[in-house]
Image (cartoon, rainbow, N blue to C red; front, top):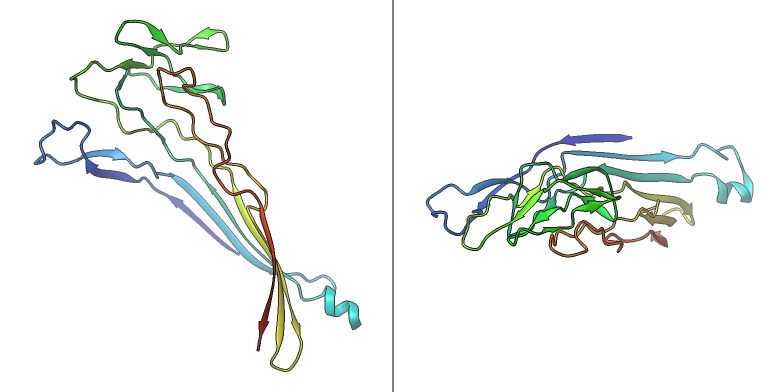
Length: 219
């Protein structure tokens, strides 16, 4: 068995927040959209001891099976921030957020009106201000505190080799990618002036469980 854990922080410095910034200035350092602070990978290969003393025709089919698998668990990527808005200075994360309102979307428009400021019958504090025309942007490209979860993933396989001749072996393999059939949904909408703001799109972004059977002849 092999276990690996990675703790990291990925930073980008490849562009400028505003087009007015001089190109001689060092590009702005921002959290990368692919940042995942914690990642653990567990992999292993096991030869099943059951039926190891079984002989005859049953032994041919029941003993000698092996299992292997790869399990991955990691933090989600930070949510991309929308252009045209400024932060009010508060953390937009909601401690009780759900798929209908993943984060605080309360926005004060340039007209002074408030948009998307209610959740579970309560009025949310202002988290964003709509940006006036011809003003500099101050909102980073991603929200460090908003990281939609990535479900754990397990890829599994079971296989056995049958000896057909002195130099001929037939291997049977049964493999399951995303063996737990864990669904990863799309991130919440960041269109702050739309009614869908903060709503998680319930469309699966990853592949569902995929099972395949194969035979491999070696000679």
